[in-house]
Length: 206
DNA sequence: GTCCAGGGCCGTT
DNA sequence: AACGGCCATGGA
Image 1: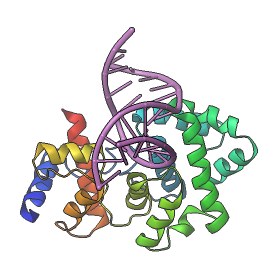
Image 2: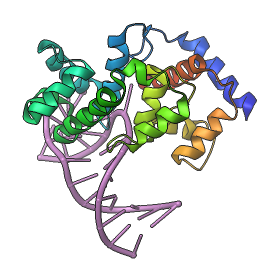
Image 3: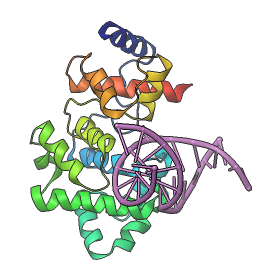
Image 4: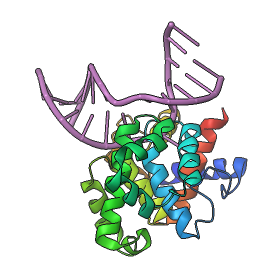
């Protein structure tokens, strides 16, 4: 299996190259505090929703100087309806406004900033995120891998299609697949980021 | 009009 | 543990 996965990665890499800056936000340089926050907030906004609609929500937040964890915390605390209105284009907007707020509240009240929270180790951060209602395995892992730069493989709909397409496993459950990838690949967050991004790029390309 | 998109929660079995 | 209903918008 190890050889098989690496071979599939190489094939994707040869076809598309290193996916930096080619694929949404996730694979930009991710240097700024703002990028990290946008990645984390986007991970929630994109639940069961296409990225176009997420960008509309981002636009609304940006226009009102609200695209930050601190601002979302402030707005949500004072006026949830205002936050709901801003994220409305992303669908499931009441849930998502609430989820964004709970996440922001957790970060600001306990750590002051996302960067400060992400100083803790992977297992700690992951567990804490999963305690927040509305953040499940995929959302938590997206935040860990792409904002936190921590080595955890993200399993999403695209990963499952990839697994099916190449007949890598019949079991498609989250943790089974995560273990399948992680136990057969070098533990390296950049590698995980690139591999997962290439899987998505490949899926969208056909 | 119909279908569906980087999920997750909460019931029921 | 597994499965179904539910949440909602905008583009194809």
